[in-house]
Image 1 (tube, rainbow, N blue to C red):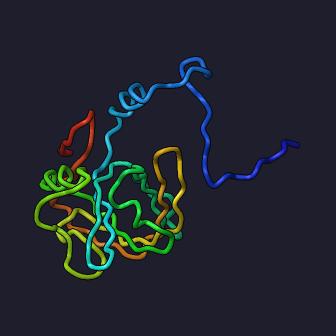
Image 2: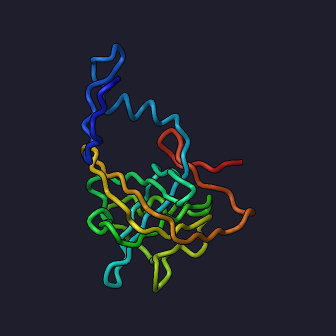
Length: 175
């Protein structure tokens, strides 16, 4: 019988690479994943009337029942200090016409008019889809944080819009 080890709250991944022992450089890793097309979204939290938000392209559904999403947030993202367990946040999936919002919120200090609703959860009213979430846990993985959020509500923007995707280090539109 194989001995099982407990799951750690923080994951320490060992070196992996071409021959199993050489580490993959950040440049090599980024280059390989630049070929992975993914949706683009804005994660947002309202704190004392102020909305803190950042653009993300690393998010996936984890469970349908109960509905849970995983969002990977950079350790220096403006929104990260506000993503504590129990906090409400939104994941706003962007449509093709919202490329400028993706660019704006990829900056640490976005400048421009707020696209978010004035009260309640910070939704982008004309997003492709929006998920209202409650932070279940935040797991540190090196300089990144993996946020697991329980989805407590959804809103979709209709089938007539096309999704904004990130591929090969740029924004594109699905045909």
